[in-house]
Length: 212
Image 1 (cartoon, rainbow, N blue to C red):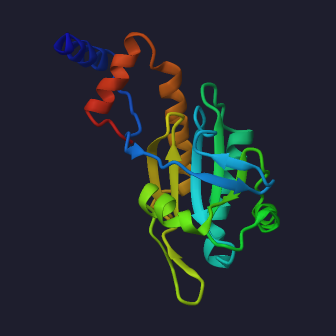
Image 2 (cartoon, helix red, strand yellow):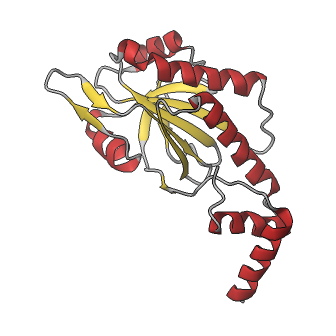
């Protein structure tokens, strides 16, 4: 039976090629955060929604302007240019410093252009930063003696099943906004089209590592 499914997948791949898919990297971590409106936001709430995460702290300043601008550009494209028919998209900037209470998050969100609906800011409790951001999302972060942070400016794309499908360190050779929005579109295509016989083609694309 298993061999038959593999053969069908290979044949389907041959028929529907070329198909590009995003890799299934690993499961995203579980978490509970508080967002800029004071609402609790958990990993369970994110189920069924494709979510783009990035990570920062409240006093990052100009060194984080690039990541904020990338998030703003992606949000603008989603609202104006990208026709997502099969997925719901959410964008979350995760702050990991102890000063990010509701009022501070709202201030940071407003200054970055986050609308609190498509794109919101949320904060982790300090004691969960190493397990969620460091071990879970596998983003380097280290608190310095002066209270600041050393960390990798990273974007992480997670699908509606809680699987990480893309990791992007700022900045890549290609525009981060271009690459990430293209990958969001690929996820939308995969979810829209991977039904019936075509599902075998998509699984075969994963087997044959047809990654963009």
